[in-house]
Amino acid sequence: ICVDDKFRDITVNGTPVVQFNDMPAVCYDAAPFQITQASETGGVPGTGVFTGPGVSSSGIFDPVAAGIGTFNIKYTFTSSAAGCIDTMTKSITVLDTASAKFSFDPVACEKGAVSFNSTSSGIPASAGSITGWNWDFGDPSSGVNNTSTQQNPTHIFNAWGDYTVTLNVTTNNSCKSTDKTIPIHVNPLPRPDFSFNPNHCLPSANVMFTNLSTIPDGTEAAFTYVWDFGDPGSGANSSTGSNPSHIYNAVGPYNVQLQVISGVGCVDDTTIILNTIHPQPTGNFTVDKTDICVGDSFVFTDQSDPADGTTTDWTWNMDDGNTETQPSFSYTYTTEGEYDVNLYITNNYGCRSTVFTQRVTVNDYPTVTAGPDMYILEGGSDTINAIVTAINPTYLWTPNQYFLTSNTVKKPIVKGVEDITYTLTVTGRGGCVSTDQVFIKVLKGPEVPNIFSPNGDGIHDQWIIKYLDTYPECTVDIFNRYGQPIYHSVGYGQPWDGTINGKPVPIGTYYYIINPKNGRSILSGYVDVIR
Image 1 (cartoon, rainbow, N blue to C red):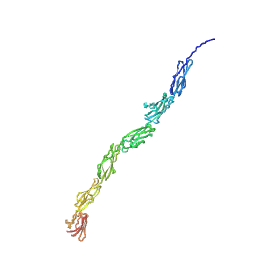
Image 2: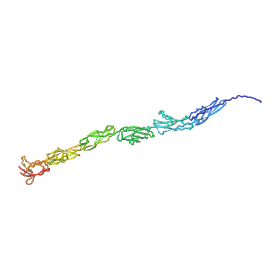
Image 3: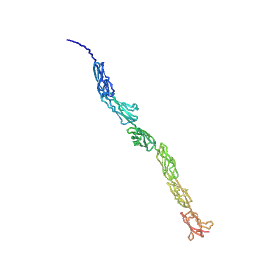
Image 4: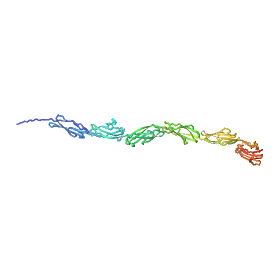
């Protein structure tokens, strides 16, 4: 056996040993990062190279480049000496992020709570669930209330205008969404305001309300109104008019509320206390007497109650076409009658009182005619025919002498005793007094002489018949012995002087017929004319 040996040196290099630990899931929006879980554990020098979706050879992993899903990342280590290789593959999961979305009340109003509702979509259940919400309302003036971590928060914007609201959400894997930003317009509230006249008067105080409401964006024309007059007992306690009125029947006070709704539905209200309704004054007056006579005066005195004010005006209606404006005064009516005097007052609030009425009576004086002078035969009697026009009259005849009836009747019967003048006093309604007089001439029986001597000596020159001159309607007729009339007179104021047509009659006997009238019998006889 032939043998030959040849020897060589052989180098045996160590084999690299790769260790690649599990990698945690990462969020899609995470920044690129260095994979640190892979290494060579045997101390063999060499170079490691990463391969796979989204990873650079040096091990920089970019989730965005890789995309959503689970990917295998391979780590290959090659020794420097002999090119010995070891590899290991691990998977990495890129988690999907949530999509931030939200909605809010269709109308946002100043100083009102605006509700926000997160409508953010989730991700596959395997990738996690939304666990966090981060809101920014774009309202830094609200301080700590400008942010919220509630899923469906509310926020009060204290000023109207435009705001930018931002939401991002996070998952239970701490994956954060991109910011969702939506502009929101916060509408201004109306500025409700109104006024009313300062003073109102019962009864039926008609209060006119004047709307003064405004809004910063100038949309007052779109306002709607709801009034509450604070008077539920009235029935018609509300109105939707812009400038309504309401009738109050009590003093109050009343809480009047105006609610104003803008064109987009923002609502505000204001309440003003109405406490300027005043009670109605009460008219009243006194008069010193209620019955007087024409020409006399009444004294009227105001006794009205001005309620909660002071009297400033007096309005008197005297019922004769005249008025007065003084609180107290004397007044004279020029004609008789009944007058309904009215008074109402006005106080310093302009409130007019009830009308007070009192009737006064002005009485005319009685019309009195005691009658013409009368002639009564001595010892006879007659009725005084007085004429009186009066209401409820009383009568008094003075002096109380020679009456055959009462001296307190209208037409008394009197006896002819002596010449006398009677006064009739008549008292009518209201104590009005009138008087008149009548003269009573008592007619004594004529005393007829049967002789006279018309001879011019101044003694018995006329045929004087005593008392005949008191019979103004008497007739005297004288006849001669042949029955021829030689003298006639009506009345005997001028006695016969024994002449005919101015010529003396012959001496002798003549015959007379005297008719005194006035109820006295005719006298006849003779008379001798001597000289």
